[in-house]
Length: 288
Image 1: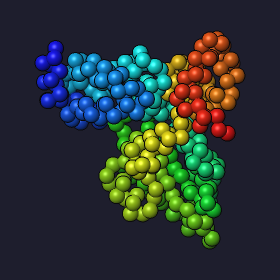
Image 2: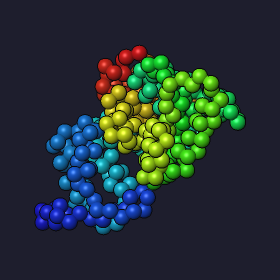
Image 3: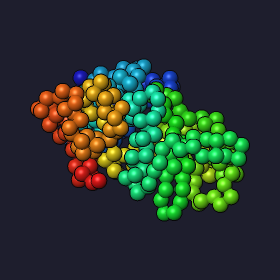
């Protein structure tokens, strides 16, 4: 077994990404993502040893993720919740509206005032804008592109379309307020989409872009974890909360009585509340 582990360290197996691309498995990348969940170095080392023994050529990234998630959950649900953040955002729903509201909540924590789904008149036609965000006397028009499947990234057609809509709105405004058009996605942008967005001045915000201010980093810093990160709530309970505008874990802490509406026992309710307190670092979650 020890010889096998050494061999796998030297020659990492090929794994299949959600896009279908075959790449070499990265133990260092797995270690970094596990450590970001809050797990200790000892826990992470144990999990990596477990996964190393189970790897084989052609394994999917989804299989590796599911195994790491299960092992983290054995230690503590909150660790698994943080590790499963990306998957949790996919679970916000097929309509995309909970994602728009979720982005608006993240911006609110950053100091923006927001309005959702407003109709603005362009020079040619009217447009419904997902989010209008205000900060420092600037107005930002924001469109959200939500994908509920892995491997579907935003290609150049999306910023092309969004830019044309923003331009039509701006052409109709004689005294345009200073600001910037944004495009936000829960996945990634293709290289052409990034090049075009930078060229025309659209701010692109995705799972991993821009570095230091990406969607993942903003969530981690602010503790703005969605309720779908919970390992204790059922799919039905999450859907119930989302339909009532409860998007963030901190919202559950502010309105714990909503858990009573689903007939959740006091014992389980306390466990759910404890999970969300740990997830969003309590102090940040208690801020109004």
